[in-house]
Length: 406
Ligand code: PSV
Ligand code: MN
Ligand code: MN
Image (cartoon, rainbow, N blue to C red):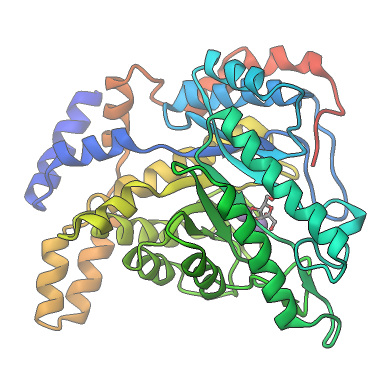
């Protein structure tokens, strides 16, 4: 059945001029990092619902993440958040992850859950608080060395609520000062990824509000600083794939935080609201991966695909499986764009022809392709079903309620 469906799919794609061997090779290389905080209890400012079976420790978060990887083959690394994932011995956390077939990914400092940071962390007008915040950033580099992590992933809640509340230019200088100190502590194989967000928790101004500000900081800092695009951190209607193409071209796109949004930074399951946007992001990335310029290709190869999801009412592990699979589906579809066809249409200024060539790939049903890839890797054809029918969920119920939360 799988073979028959795949044979038909192959025939159809060959007729469209697509080399499926290459597509399969790229699909097999796709890796998505899941966030430790996506496994713990989280919610909105109104309520955090405590779920039964939620991990109680960072070690248990790794165990849950290992399920996602075991069933999908797509998620071999886990981002950690300090101090949410604070442990005595990071070497132990690392070996626990490795014993489960995982590795520890990006280290995320937390500069937003301490009373001292109410008016800013690295941009606070009080030098003592700025020092404390910068020390935390430096501590995260030490942790990354122990966990073997390449990336320090930075998101700052810093901003103000009212005009005049803070000195915007002084805060900009303080932000740079802290980032520069962090940059100097990175070892050569490390990177810092600078995330931006236009609003929330501050509502008048945010110190790193958009990709341009993050990019400018990265440029001033040096080649180990890059921009992280969180898909939920833009104003409604922003063309995120344009930002992606621009940053790749400038060789400063370091990674993503994928999630879905309807209104604001909703942190919903990836691909649940606007899968076409995700497809178009991958279309830009894949098109850049075929560039003649080797440094563009290298930028693309180093992009960290990460999920940043916060579950309020969802079951944690299935929600993560859904996200990871949705990323894979849109990536697979984007691999089916016939770039020569798009370029030919562009060359004749054929607006509708170009749009059609891109959309055609999105409209393909990639199920036979994904089934074949999973079968070849000895994975369940339907990882979600396999999880729901398996015994893991039952086994973790003994953890009870009141597990780790953010
Ligand atoms: C807050 O907006 C946020 O969702 C950022 O996107 C961070 O990456 C994440 O929390 C974890 O700190
Ligand atoms: Mn994020
Ligand atoms: Mn966010």
